[in-house]
Length: 454
Ligand SMILES: *Cc1c(COP(=O)(O)O)cnc(C)c1O
Image 1 (tube, helix red, strand yellow):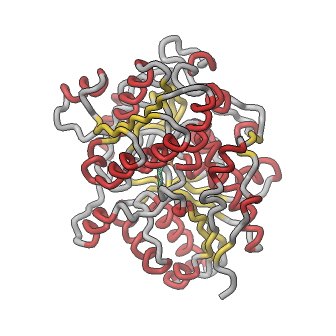
Image 2 (cartoon, rainbow, N blue to C red; image 1 turned 180 degrees about the vertical axis):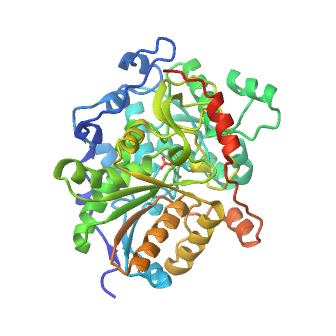
């Protein structure tokens, strides 16, 4: 066996994030003001987000955006992350494929989310903000932001999707340990929360509803900004440190990926690992396939519609051009909480529309079978979200075996699953099922989705 781990030094942490929009011929459609249906101006976003983040969000010209020294210093706590050759998994699959994974689970909070949490907290602090709000699904983003908020001296309120609040109590404890205030969503503390609780008293919550609550609180609180852990362009931007490091590490390994795979919630860990490689395709015409793995129960890329939709349930956010299942879509209670979101970010949606990427859907039981195989072969318990990327990488490896040809596969291990063992318990006991979205349900949802822009 040759080298297993490809390690970079502190000095190799990227000094700039990669803004793929600058290199796209077909720019994503603009965000729209839901009232006027006109392209959103920066000023309209300033009440909600830190200015520097708004500028990053709307930047279509600069391919490289410098990483502030304070952020890079914080990155040094866990970056660069290892790139690992998954010899154990290759052997278990008896495949001619070479499988590599970028291990983002080594961050102090266990996922890639900290890459953007640090940046967002930094810019808020720099602009004199004192309080921030956010939502969290499985609790990964909330955990990352809680640590980042504490590191930069900000007060944080987190709306946590109720089902996760109950299923994943340790993520709540983690956020509270870092000093954040955590509220189960839907809650009675906001108009949006009260409205949905009145209509559906037993509603278990969704990311869409939690976003509405966090936005409402931010707007009503002085000196307070809202932050988001996925979907938006500036979050994708921050995550590109993953792929920029992986690019160098694949060079160290002497290989170039035929295919880059990541799981897909709103698209940021996917963007993070894939965009730096897609850059080679856009600027040098290099061949590389990019594959997003989403859950069968929340299939916006494989079965959703491309159109303008709200990012949240109550309709507080700008209109986003995206593949969506409709902002009222209530996904099944799968354990990959971070993938239970109705839409995809606007950059990835445009890339999908223009044929620059593919998407596959993975059933819950297949994701846990892949996770278990990976755990036994590599000694790492993956997050239920990351398990979708593993399942898709395994499909690629099996395809290579079928064809009897080599194939170089790179996937992102977005997080570990050590706080998700209740989900593994259920899987091992045979208590998990597949929640596939029926055609009838899908149509019902898409029909309800009013054509906001014709
Ligand atoms: C949040 C999360 C995801 C999904 O979010 P993206 O923005 O699509 O990356 C995937 N994996 C883990 C571990 C997460 O915490």
